[in-house]
Length: 132
Image (cartoon, rainbow, N blue to C red):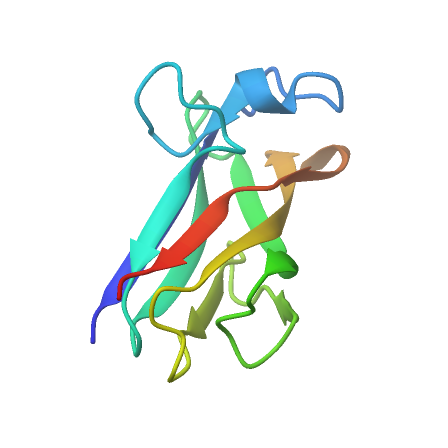
């Protein structure tokens, strides 16, 4: 049982409602969209979603405000997991008897340029696979 860190990198100086995919990523290889990005985990692992700014200044913040089960077999105890801490992140443990399951979830996040909130709430729909 381990922590699996899923880091969302956001260009906090450019992101808007219209360019979420081009201004954010999970560090995946070129050609893999955010929707096709998949995290692999095992039963008992704790998934931790956190956000970081890929631009300057260093005072910009990416808050992961919620992770919502979207489709597939839910591998967590809840459908909606809320962010906590500062900056906000979400953590959840993979429940028993979910080996081989796949799910799509929606990751909601907000961006702050210093003290000023940039836009509204953004979202991405990546995938999660539990190793058999």
